[in-house]
Image (cartoon, rainbow, N blue to C red; front, side):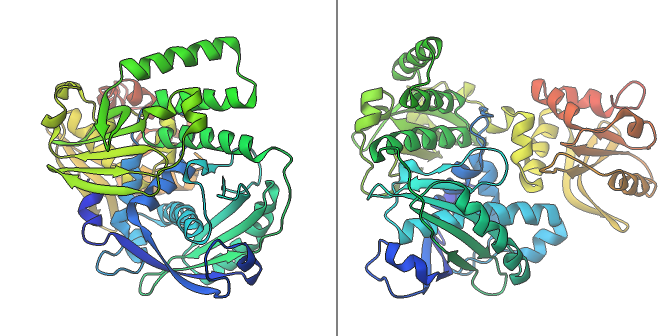
Length: 489
């Protein structure tokens, strides 16, 4: 893992080509209301921030710093050009089509937001995912004129796929009230600049006052952001803030919210930066590298939240080997190379590694790139040695190979959004096991596998229930790959 600043220092921004629907032109908040073809430049840090805000689950909060998982996406962007290009062939070859689909979806979301920020006067602190069941748009926000922008975003690696996605996107974007409803369709290219189409804004009115919409959207925004940044306490706090604004908070919930407010104000680490106070948390992301994420303390109180005005712009600066990124919405992130500067406000030896705090729902949000990094960390904690990635054995390429004692283990990962794995996939992996001269073959998946299937095959499996056991205690890994009866239950 590398700090994002190590990438951004070379290419702070990327460019994407955008085709704008002529029907959208009157709604743009730019001086140019005539040009339909534009090249838009965006910041990598902001791209990852927006992907996490929209894609992370607000109602399945955890203390895992999922920001780092999304930073892994940058490994699949070409760095030798300022055009946004994706390593499509590498992803297909090393990670498979499932991961390519997941990455396209993530980038499609992020691209849709950075384009919106360029074309419209968005209020950053109101950007949030749209929750619900069935077909619905991806996200919405309030513009500076208090109108509501609703966006459905798609990402693809071919024109044919994008054209198929267009039909569904144009339908989904209408399923949430908004003043401007947009379908964002991005095509990711490898050998030329990636492209986007911003389409069709029919209008539907909402009876809620613009001021109340602003407050409720902002509370949802901060709940999502802190779920993404691994601070479950702040995420739940702003979920309760949203309930209070909507008038549906219970007396017990209000009491708990007040207790958390007092704890945040007095007990959580506080950093002074840019003449402001920020309450938040520290994480270890690598040996001698740390991250702090926090919020402007003005946003903690109900009155302060209501009266808060966004900063004029995002800022970032490096001081004493620490990189400070302060977002317009009052969120501060610090990539810390010099942790000793903060030894007076945090016990350095007790800062947790972000990989140690994980739930099975966190795994569901990962692609296989991020999961592989998590599993390497897990193997290292359990004392495995000689860990190698992407090792080819005959016609088969296994994700990880590691040694524990005298035994070599071969790990294959299958992470599915639908949490289902077919019997054919398991049988195929079982056949690959026959080609190994020794050692143990282990399939790791977030799917639930029936015991009957386990009894029919000759490989070890850590399924969804196994991942849950590992999340409770990392040492359960050894028992799962070496059960007494050589079968996992």
